[in-house]
Length: 162
Image (cartoon, rainbow, N blue to C red; front, side, top):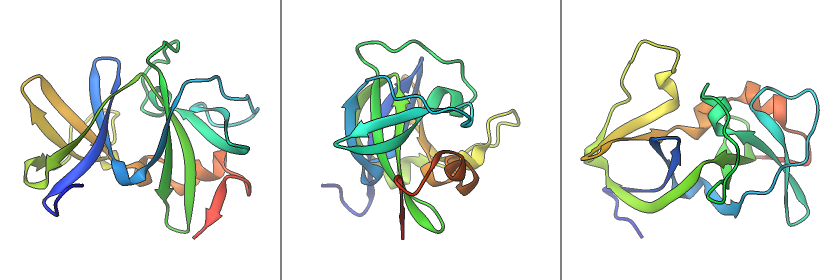
């Protein structure tokens, strides 16, 4: 349990970079299994993952961030997220290279998202935390999976009205 001055996160890797997402959004962490393909979705949408009989729309987080795809390994995982959008709760599977840890950051140590002036949209970043080995980028899941994206991948079976 984290204190009011801490943010508890799941740290995960994509290539050599470290990202984090608040634990409160993570419903489950699954071993990777290839999602069932559905045609005509956005490029980052890779299909449906079966979660105990529920089809969960699943995205390749690398593609969503504009990174090249990578072949799955034994460390590849699917984070099942419950992301609050403006008008509903979106359950979403997110394919990542590996889970690193569950940890807490002091909120005072979280720096604002930098404006880096390239294709990365800093609106997708809640903040960054400095480490001896580099930075941990805290992702804003509600912004990176916008309502427009959700419409592209969701259906009545995957979306729950708030």
